[in-house]
Image (cartoon, rainbow, N blue to C red; front, top):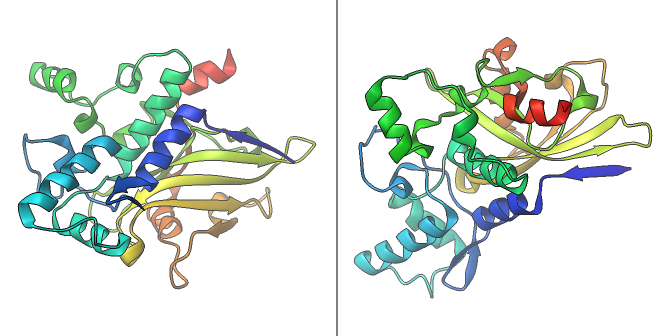
Length: 259
């Protein structure tokens, strides 16, 4: 078997979100999305912060609220973060990982390679000042920015899984982190990372796996491993408007891989 991985820089971003340094403990970032549509303010408070920004914000609020992160266990720290609306959403997480992957290749930031729906002067100015906040899961994985991957043997680290949320007009995205192939180059499995709102107390950063049990069948029919009490919320999201979902590859990576 042979396994392909994201660059070490991209892996380090994932590790940083799964091992936030808080109170001498390693804390997994919970999920948070700016559903209330807050304008302005710090990006860390709208689900778009870097691991460092999240750590600093938790420390600030712990002092303001008198919460002792040194004495609290990981579960209590995550509960505090959820109460303070501090976490990372799926697109924010994916953008930072993809950005690290591009930088490791000596390329520009990801927003330089994306097509945006709104190109008004105000929108362009906002993207210059706050580029991360302008990128959502739907835009990141739509046909303007991605190609569809239909052959399992073509899957590569940095590919995306496009899915839908249960709320109206909600979208979800996960990023393929590693791909394992047999000696003949056939994909046997791949892992993905994402930040998900469900999974109850285990919400936020998660690592899932898909085993290709029958390459002749569709993605939804393979073996998905990321359950919580018998439910796989990533797979459930994939099945919402399934024909519009699936494996995607950003155009910039497609150009790199086909050169």
